[in-house]
Amino acid sequence: MTVRLRAHHLLCLLTYVGKGYSPAFTANYDKVVKRLGEGEAVMIVSGPDDICAPLLGEPEPHCLRESAAERDRLAARDVGAFLNRPIRDGDMLVLDASSLAGMRKAFSAGLTRQACSGCEWFGLCDAVAASGFSDTYL
Image (cartoon, rainbow, N blue to C red; front, side):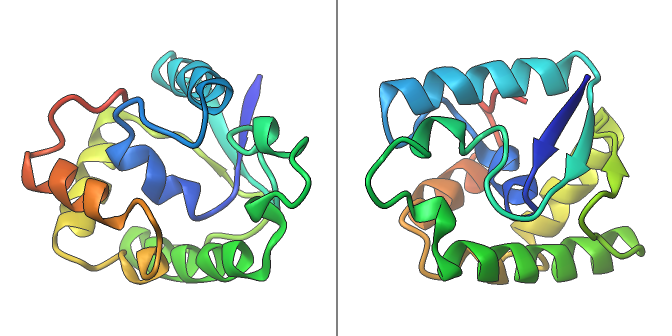
C-alpha cells in the first residue's frame, strides 16, 4: 500500500508527538505514522490526504482552505529544494531513517519552515525540534 500525503504533511510528520485536532485525528495519524514506520511509500497528493481524513466530516474542514493549499505549495518548493528534486502530485517518496534525519536537520535550520508560518502548531514544532525531535512517533 501507499500513504497519500499532501506536501506540507512531509513537514508535520517530522515533529508529530501524538498531539492533534481531536482524538479521532490523532488515532488516525498514529496509524499513518505506523504505516510509514513499516516502510510504506508516500505518494504526494493535492488536497486532503490520509492524515486529513478524520477532518473531512466537519462542517468547514480547514484542510480544504486555500491556506492549506498554500502550505502545500511552499512545502513542496522548500522540501524539493532540500532534496534536490521537484515535489509534485503523484511523486513517490520513501521516508527512511536517512531521509528523515536530513529533513529534520533542514527543518531545524529553518530551510523548510516557510510553510509553517502562521500554523497553530508552530510553537509545538519549535519545541520538538529544539528537543532534538525526542518523543516523535516517526
